[in-house]
Length: 160
Length: 398
Image (cartoon, rainbow over all chains, first blue to last red; front, top):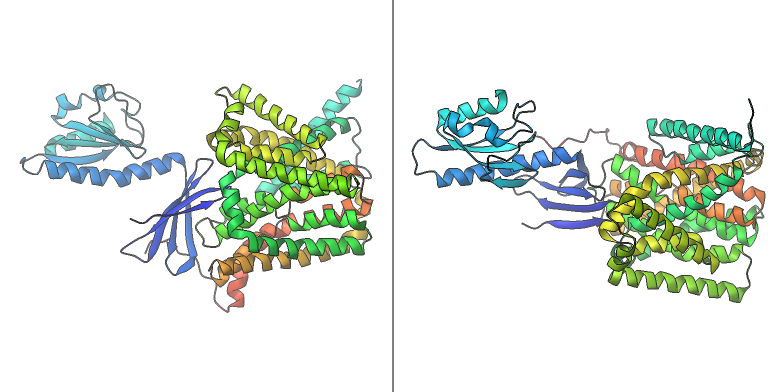
């Protein structure tokens, strides 16, 4: 992928690339003072720039959302031979009772037979988190188990 | 109730600060830079204005000096030495056109008004330099950071700021009325300093940063302000402007230290720079404005056109569309803080007639207001000129 990097002196750095399916360029402006903007430009028409300012939390959430499907697809591929086992990514809902609490408190494995294999946050992957791992709002939790177990896991994360 | 000197000073200073806060809020509401309002505030409270504040004058004097040092220090911090060098390499043709087109009207009007060669040199700077503060804010507010013409606009600002580093020592020498030889020495000292600092910043920026850097906020702030005032004072002792000293220190500080320094100094700069704008307003007699009002308006009209031409030409060279060229031109129109810094130096040196301050104040008042408005209305105006209906820019979701 060819990413064009342009410095915007005094403001920050612009990084963008062309999309293959639509006639658009897409990228981000990293502000020196920490903010991030998402930008879209129509190719051949530089006058239709859309600039969407993202707060730090919003940018992190977007990064996790973009990272999750890839990770889940990878895990699914690995579990393909095992019948009845699937992988799913669950978002920590805004009012989750486990936000700010330890993974061990959910007793997920005992209650659902499903395992939390990874947590995505701020675009980072926390692989096989231990019982001391502390959840935060906006975390994306990747769980492996039976379909029934995954449904139960989802309701634990949202309702306790 | 007993109003002794200090008590009165506290009350007056409090009233000034609070008043500026209210003005700043008004400016933010209507999406303008607060600078013109601070100037107006100064006009109201100053000589010949509604109320005269005598008790706080000494404090405001010193505070405004610190304000200029902080303004230039943060300007230096804004750019890395690398950005300055590549910026200059890329934008020098546009940068030169910028100087010629925008300094000339200032010189002509100053000479026609009889402000003398000193006034002409100072006025050249006032009409030349765009307000990088207002321009950067407008570009971001209007969502133009992804546009093709934006790097062009920013590189012209970089060129202007480097030009300031050369221009300010020249101006300081002229204002001091030194002989040709002394002036030449001063300017060569300044030019050598600029070159040395750029080289040092490019190669050894991290060592300079290491000297001022500190984990502790308090120590960091003290070291930063201390070094800035020291460097500024020393620079002014060798007749190179204090402002240039601060600017060069800002360039020499790099990377994460520069980033932290900007964060920690910004509120301090805003406070002291506000004092500087107020002082400039204070020392301008509002009664001196009406005689120069016509000239200021003429100058505003002409230099709006010349800035648009500059940006238009530069964006065209970079391959931007017609609309992009128009946007680049109007983005550069705003003059602000640095025009007042230049005018302030001239007035403080007492080397220019009273009309100069009035002309500069009125001009900057006009330009700080016209700039953001021009940048905002350019798109609908261009569409109207092109005979197209104004279309809503789609959000990218189809």
